[in-house]
Image (tube, rainbow, N blue to C red; front, side, top):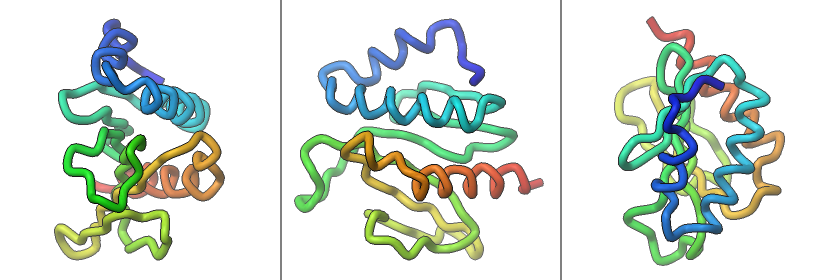
Length: 131
């Protein structure tokens, strides 16, 4: 996966004070790097973004945590052309017709399963298909 020369340090800075979330991210990144070797990853101020032609996924720390959310988790965001019908989806919005943004809470490495990777692949394919 393509990353800039400061990626490792930027990731550590992004997760400063959040060691459990860093471990979750590292597990997710390993799976994503294997599945999407041609993708580009960028660490930004509020999220870590994954691109392949267009943004297809993002990882962030929950800034506005709902009371029902776990204390330690990551928010994995994917954009799809349909609404996911899954209890794993914490928030789903349709910012414009035919475009659904889903926020999925990740609390444990075992949640990076076939279903999660399938959603990430679907999001990548949807992003690549855009003009």
